[in-house]
Length: 429
Image 1 (tube, rainbow, N blue to C red):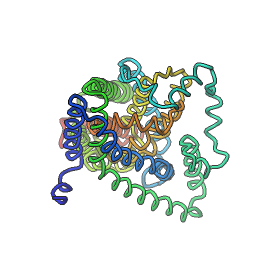
Image 2 (image 1 turned 45 degrees about the vertical axis):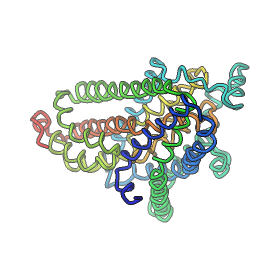
Image 3 (image 1 turned 120 degrees about the vertical axis):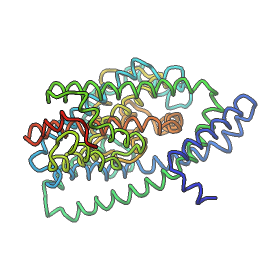
Image 4 (image 1 turned 45 degrees about the horizontal axis):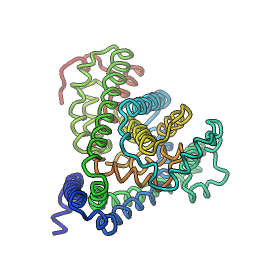
């Protein structure tokens, strides 16, 4: 029985668990039995979230350090490094602001009142009312950890991000002398990623427990909020793909037909949507770039693998949306400084997001922590979002892959390695 269950693709198992958990929770909500769900079922969901929390710091540290090291790999970058990195970081920064804008406009978190759920929420609101929130300069100063080990132990995610970036740059600067350290972090990342995959195998059980609890507590009302969140994400991602990639990069900078670009990458987008994995889509992305867009092999072979590592525009949109969603659910009024810190944090965090399904769930706490969300509050937000994350992750991956292809085309153009005749011709794969 267990072998047959594991033979089913993970995302299908999550959907099955989602439907079963929703049915159980709704039955408990409308027929009585919500206390049973809270007492006996919810703890399994809490355990899954605790496993996620356990991996947040090691995942951020190892993937960020390895992401920085990858930027200096001559096999990946060569002379393309500065342009590629600038383009990837630039599109990511635009992406997170688009996510913040759509979250503010659509308001997916309104109607879910979590402000009275725990003491931390009430304390946070009281602090904001009294004007005790730190300024943006104080927040930026807090990025620098006095004790990196203490920051890791205390879960100070922003300080961990800063230290990981500095550490990665230090390893690059030392070159061959730091080879043992580089090998250690490469191996550590592989180990953490393997543990992450183990944890994600438990996702169906976590989804079952959490959706059963949410439905038992709130009934069908939560569906409207999740629908708004999904709509906001898909709309924001489409704006990023059509206007930033198609309009700005392809039409304005490349001066090439936008329709040809999208028909040339549709196979890669299809694989990205079905697998929800940038890494799994990489072979198809390289093939489409070479045969449909006219990108030279040397550029496709360096820019696209790097993009699968550090270019996560869809994730940046998602992290911005989650931040706004959480603020609305907890009744927090975000200031411009809050928005700026969320944008900065999401941009930096996206460097370390691994190209596996739902990895950004592990990093959502980084942006929520910028405006004081506690671990317990983060758990509540993840309880709402996790059961629906696969649907959101599919569109995030399409955005990531589309951005990789647009950047590769532009870098190839600048390097004189783009065959425009192939780009303008009908797709060959």
